[in-house]
Length: 115
Image 1 (spheres, rainbow, N blue to C red):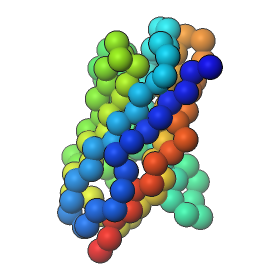
Image 2 (image 1 turned 60 degrees about the vertical axis):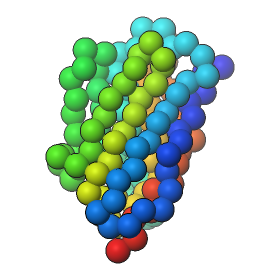
Image 3 (image 1 turned 30 degrees about the horizontal axis):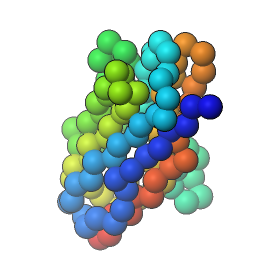
């Protein structure tokens, strides 16, 4: 069974940076797109951004210009570079990869930004 595992979360100060990584434990056939979502306490899960197999990216307005998504489909991996972090970015971040035969989710990694 394919599982995704995130890494790179943690505690960072306002204005700092973090890089999240997500890798699958097995090959995902026919990757169509990959992305990151986040869920803050008491709020619904929201899209942070995603990237198609062709490299087209899409970001939430709240992170445009600060976050960058990249992917290495040969390694079944997706990354999220987060710069200029704000306290409102505090959330659990989840990666997702959509392949030909299913969509897979990671278990989440906590990102906390202190003011």
